[in-house]
Image: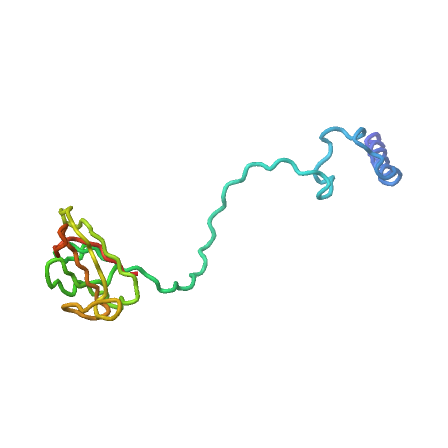
Length: 179
């Protein structure tokens, strides 16, 4: 036990001597054993950083954020109409107002369509005919954009005409969209 206490005193005395008597920066790489220093022996930024390791696994998803503000109200309304005038599919709120003759369809969109782009194109909703002519569309209600329609003549109605390859009105399926 005595030997252990003497050894402890010598060790502590040597450390105390080194801390108080050695001149600053007198210990160099020659006196330090390899792998004997730890990261706690250095101040932040004293040693250059090593290569970056691979990224760790992604953490769990955070909670959903609050709902954003409403959009500007721009929406596309569309319908797929069969040759007989039945609506095969649509975005909602569109009805067939009238079918006054061959190839002529009047569709009610429920709100004004004047001032909005109106597009129509041929479709294949139960329509086997491939030989088609032009498909045209525009608003009813007259004015600079539209025309007078034979029925449901108001600015919420779109008139679509489909034609055969000779240019005569003929029943064909079509898509119509109002932006």
